[in-house]
Length: 386
Image (cartoon, rainbow, N blue to C red; front, side, top):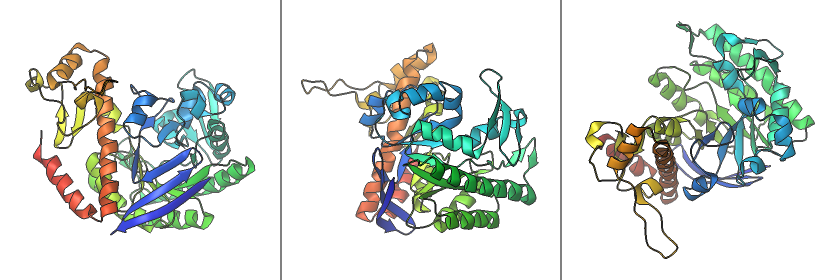
């Protein structure tokens, strides 16, 4: 089940509403990544409080652990992880790509040794569809061959990118057939590949559009390519996707990337950056990035971001209506230096809140017809620095 409604546009930027089996998603939206059925360091309650509408699960890792028997026992991922809002699951293609020489790709699928226990495994388009059916995710991604930018210093050639793209295209046909055979009531997205070659992207896109998927993703970016190449593909491909279908840019990126992606017509984003950076003491704020481990924060009484309303910055409202107050940079610096687990937890809450609030502000700007002004002010504020 998927229904996408386009509510407003400004240039290429789009304001939409996506209805899925487990709820409604207002777009543009950022989707927190929950690889093993959890967004690291953040409870489902906190995700709801900060405005998360849809989160990701990882097909490959959940197949490894806890395994399909456990997930089937719970009727899928929603009840297992206690998240009753929409979930998108990736296909496992990116994780297979990241195994490098540990995997062998053929027309049939990918053979590899389990990174958990060494078992010999075989992942095919059909298997990916079966796993995602067991996960009962609202959005299912086709199994694709993620085209690398380079391998061992060798930059992928046009011929290699074409081979990879055409393999993904054939796998898309098999995914669609297996998805239909399983009578999966959720939505299957196709993934546009083609490396850094625009004409290959257009060929991939045309073939997928002919298959009439409910939604489309742009894959094969943020895989080690120079930033200018990523921005070039982002400026080229999303705008060519069907206007009446949701558009998903996979694995991107910084706050600047999100706003730039919206300007190019992207509706859905995901990235591990907010939580991964948080675990390394790297915080995002309205006025630039902040590294909390730096000595200059040792005695700083200010919150991370004085404009932020997250629990880390503002605290919470007690039952009697009083406000607890947030945490100082000095305290977060102290936690980080001591290796206390509360440090990455608070940092993750802040970073995810920042990303989700940024997208809320983007939606409000699109509703008001002032996205261009918002994007200009956003860039100025971020460049100002903390």
